[in-house]
Structure formats: C-alpha cells, structure tokens
Length: 114
Length: 111
Image 1: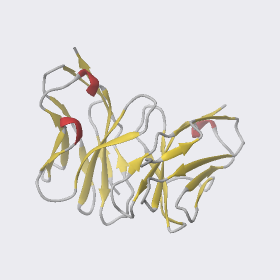
Image 2: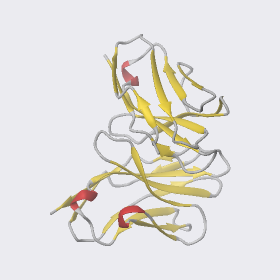
Image 3: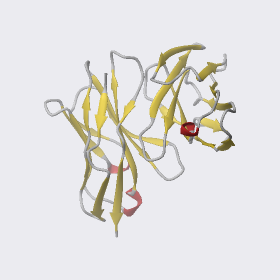
C-alpha cells in the first residue's frame, strides 16, 4: 500500500521569505511524486512532478521540490514567497507498479502574510 | 483547448437518492479517474476508466459506479446516498498512465 504524510496542517511565512512544505511518502515500488495546489472552490492545479533523474525538480510559479530517497521525502520549496501563493497544497504519490492511482496527503495550508 | 470539465458545479440531494456526475476529459486524453475530497481532507481515489472499462478501484463500496463512453467522457453514479457522501468530487483525465489533469469538481451536498 502507498501513503503520503504532510506533517504540517498549516505553514505561515512572510512575503519575500523562503517557504518549505513538507511531504514524506511510502511505496513498495519506485515512486512517482507530485505536488498540486488548490485555491478556494477550485480543483487541483499541477505544480511539478518527480519521475526519475535529477533530485531537484523545478515546476510552475517558481516552485521546486527536492526528492530524497533515503529520507523518503519530497519537500516543496520556493525561494521567495508571494501573498498570492496562499492556498492548499497537496503532495501525491503513485507507485509505478500499481497503475495510475494517486494517493494524496491530507494537505498543508500555506499562509503568506504581507 | 478546453481542459477537464465537470457538471454540474453544485448539487443538493437527500439521503437515499441517487446522483450522476459527469466529466469531459481534456482533449487528447483517453483515461478518466474519479476522486472524492471530503471537507478538510486530501482527495481519495474512487476508480479509473480506460477503454470504457473500470481498470482500477479504490476502497469505495459498490454504491459507487461509473461508466466511460466512446468519446472518453465519463459518469460517476452514487446510489443510496448517505450524509457522508457529501464532498467535492474531482475528475482527472490523462493519456493512459501519464500525468493527470483535474477538473474544477462537483460539490455534492447530501441532506
């Protein structure tokens, strides 16, 4: 079985400061990892993914994530937060030996204050 | 190029009723997945359709069923609605096992 943990319900950061949203995962096979963002009353928007290769993945809107196999983590980062980044962020994992099903974490609310 | 579309946007039903939700995939996509997102939680996988057949199913009861049409669009049916079925239902489309793109969702309220 695959699982995702997002240990922080909420992350608060000041505008212009770096941000990190944490994610750890568990899969039996090789993981495909994803980050999605959700704005109020909206669906999920894809930010970035890790399939293979470089451990540092760059995505949309200046976000990046670092894959760490030994720590089974895939933390989302951004060097300089914007107020408009305030939203709900979901980490998801797919076991590439188990079809296309995504397993999501519980989400982390990011609050960026001016 | 239209993305994933879902209808209706909102729906209110009473316990015991049946509901049908609809999804049109992004152009060029042939696979549709459905997810349930309860308030304050992450989405949970319900099932996936490819070539008009259910290919993978999550931990949901048989009250949840679906269909995929030849044009790749899909329906999610839920019978004998329970209060706990109140949620945002998300449809995602992909080209086979590639990256999934999500629609805006249908908000179902069961009274």
